[in-house]
Image 1: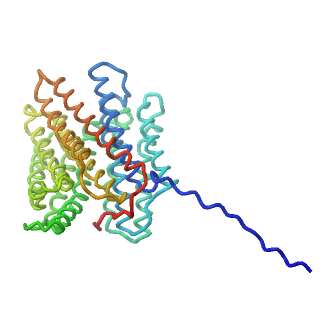
Image 2: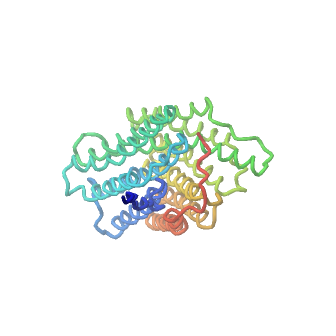
Length: 410
């Protein structure tokens, strides 16, 4: 009697996910860098040379939307999902789910760029779909790990998503709200998010570096009640800006918030960080928070001195963009197993973007040289983001060198 032949099973190994889809910081920071160039170049080309530009009611509103919700939104997603994996100890969102999130972001950019040709409801849905998806993923991860304290981060992102929908609807004349007030409020809400996250990572990273390099000085103050007061000052400013966008109370709240955040920054001992550029970037980027708040407050109280449009660039080109490039560069290195040291490209990128903000603000105060200074600011902005993409694009796309170290802040 013949013995029964053993069953032979041949199973193909599961295909590995390309490194590009192994963490949200990779595609989303790369998308942010690309849009930072496209949305600025396209708008300036339309403004100066009359080249056809996408319209969201107006070309300026399209530019504002993409820089706030497109560029800013991609960076927020890249940081949030990367940080959540560290906060919860769960595997990072990767593979098909990350592909779907990135595709949703791209779809939003396309829909907003052809808004004039689409039904209004579809444009609004496409605009906010990315944020809804992002919040859902974040909520799933935090709830699974019972990490309830970080739900407040999702609450702030929910506010940004709300203002995205309202701003888009106002631009398309669906609702009778002031579009300028809405995007101004959205910018301040992103500043609130930067204040919340920055108040945790900046002093932590600075303390870690000072201890590692044996810097003999007072250590940075970690998050405490004073930081809560700083956050409250931004919340109060947001509320005042919604109630009375041009009121004295709004301007005074912004100036008070600027003073509090300047004191907060001083408590983080950034004066010592000149020895370590990748740490100094965090402090120099956050410096634009009090400066931008002060400029915006001044534009409300003394509109003849500076316009709110110019002042807001201190918060967008300054605080938001500089913090994005500082955090993105650090994440690209640390989460791909590389040494967390700022090289020539990151230093160049950060410096160009930081200085371009100065030129952009000064341009608004110089009627006779506005176009020239705007061109200088634009070229420096483009150069900065090109330096980032050239230096860190291969890092974001390629494989990790060794086991990533993660973000040591919970």
